[in-house]
Structures are given as C-alpha cells and as structure tokens.
Image 1 (tube, rainbow, N blue to C red):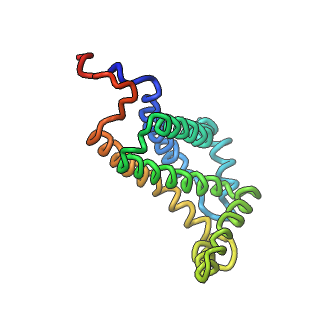
Image 2 (cartoon, rainbow, N blue to C red):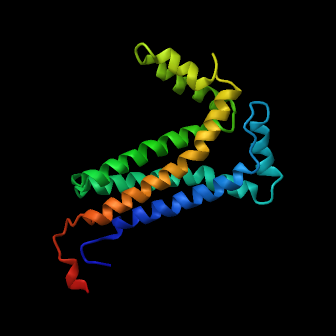
Length: 195
C-alpha cells in the first residue's frame, strides 16, 4: 500500500463487498418471498424454517444491512476527518448513495409485514403529508389508496428490489470520480516514492 493511505481507506472496499452480499442474499430471498399482505409474514417464516439454509441467508441479509451502515458511517467519518468533501463530485455521489441506501433499508424493514413493519410504514409515509399543498396527495399515491395496504407492500417490494442496482450504478460513478481526482492525501507523502 502507498504510504499516504492507511487502513481507514479499506472501508470503501468493505462497502462494495457488503453490497455484493446484500444483492446476492436478496436475490435468493426474492425467490421465496410473497409480496402480499396475507402471505408476506408467513413467507418470511417459510424462508427461515423450511428452506435449506434460509435462516442463514435471511440473517445475513438482515444483519448485513447493519454492517453495511456501520461501514458506511466509518467511511463517511474518514471522509469528513480527512477532508474528502473537497472533491465535490465524489462526495455528492456518496451522499446520493447514503440516501438511496437509507431508503432501501426502510423499504426492506417493511417487507416482513409484522406489526412494527406496518406501523413503521404508516408513520414514515405519513411524514410526506407535512409537505404543503401536495402532501396528502403524495401519501395517497405512495400508499396506492387511502391506507397502507397490498398496493403499498407491492410498491415497497419493487423499489427494494430495484434500488440496490441503482446503488451499484451510483457506486460505479463514485469510483469513477474517485479515480478521476485520486484519493485525498492527508499525510502529504509522495506515493510515487513507494514504487
């Protein structure tokens, strides 16, 4: 490794590994999950109890999301500490990745359709009603009706399935901008001397 980098620069690679695990486990889970208010909860139980290693894949997916956020927050903290925000394009795309990941995690939290999921979806989507003039219309559109229902679950499942591919595209753009500008060099050491 170049002398101008430290172990803190590994978290970008760790995030890519976490994203790959999330996508692979998510694809497996999507083969068995039923996006229906009557079947969603029982399909999660079916995955955990009846599918070979389903419990492991489901736990990897659920807990992998937490690991993903821990690594992301460390990555952001390193960027703030070392002034990576001065590379505006890279930083802006990173912020977009963070927001998209938060949305994806919320959508995934709703999918098991337990009581916490249902009321989490109700409360968070109702926050949109605070937007002047269009808030209530927006809430009705997100719900697909006048309450959180089957249409809401289907929409959340579809978006939860698609957003990781958007995150992958944004991550590719993030890496492209990073290679355009190079990583920041807080030590001031010349990495060419290491060659």
